[in-house]
Length: 230
Image (cartoon, rainbow, N blue to C red; front, side, top):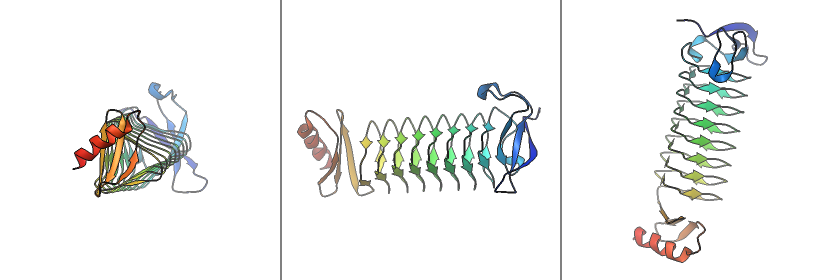
């Protein structure tokens, strides 16, 4: 196996255990040329010598974190704990991914986002801005969490569902199809959420409407959601 990178003696200015890497061959996928400097690692286990995976910019990977497959990490990202980034995932800007989190598939995490705990972000999912995904939560399909949205505990968000602004999705909540949850609200295990013909209606178990989407025929769709709740 031809080595892809070497660890230089260029020490991180704030963490003396981390050193910059240098490419030993071209990585066409990411326009990396042999001799280009990359980000910082603690040891060779942080970045696979196989595939086109790369750590660039001032990104840090340390402790037991691993980048492999064709994944790309760059910017001021920090990966640590036992985080794994693989397949074609991309992590950039000043994101942090740590603990036992997994980001893979074609997923992207960027901005000031955090992914941690046992969370999994995969498929074509996006986490960005100041969003957080953590606990045992899963985000997949083409789902998105952004703004200051949070998905945590055992929540599942998938298909084309979106969580944004100050919305929190938690407990055993499930969001799917084209659900859009925004604003200051908490969706948890005691909630029922229904999507019908372009509108999302969210009720608590007392049948009280908490959040609804916009529709020219909103009353019809609210009635539909109430019937499903019952």
